[in-house]
Image 1 (cartoon, one colour):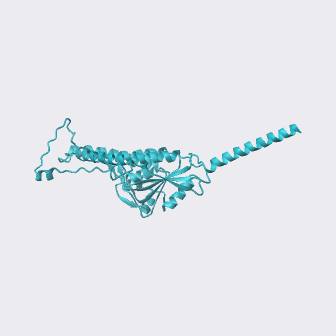
Image 2 (cartoon, helix red, strand yellow):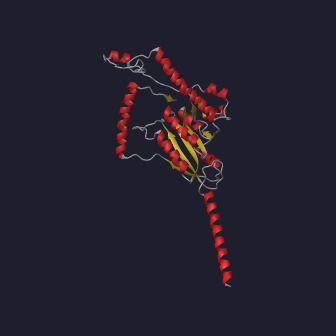
Image 3 (cartoon, one colour):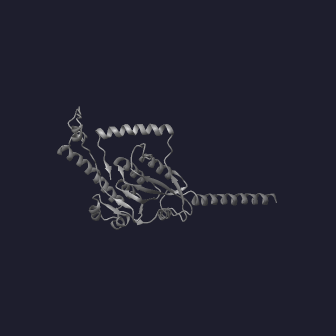
Length: 302
């Protein structure tokens, strides 16, 4: 009798262990999505990360989200076990070349499915980021495209002459003041700037064609990669995007890419600034912006 009781007890323990193991596997499948693309899950969340306004590397008094904030949000969403897919909600005209590339490279490194949704506007650098995603969706009346690079160099020399203001520039290096607002650019300097723009523009187009391989015709793309604006509907016809639809539809499609039948939504935002850092960043940005306006070139993908 004692032996029978021990056997029954062991059997109960074994059954209980197998049951707990089964529950653990079931729980991991239902609640904790894997980072691998295409793994099906019944439940899970779609992380929404906003890209709004000008894309910049540093925060300013008027722009409180930088490219590095977005990269940080993408990293947190990638590591969050409750998140199965990531959706970029885009409403931006583009911005700094380097800032844009930080986000593009991060998006390309993600293992979880990524979807871009373009609302009002997603042009230039913002489209560059969208093209890096697995799926690009836009409202059919949104504005996208504008594939190109621009550098605007003001010339205030005549205005300063009329105001009787003289500026003395001391330099070492023939082209050290190239693009200065105090003098007209020479043809040689314009050629040098144009060469730099051509490199950035070439990389932009090459990467979009790589990201959209099999979805876009290179010949057609070359025809519209001239800075022109397109509606979402027109962009779909040219292969710049995959589908048109609303944000709700984009969330649904992001869930489908991750194998989720009923996705939840989790919004990621930049970590809040302290009162001190807000004023500190504002002062730093003002000084940096003034310096750049005087002595530096600034390329933007827009």
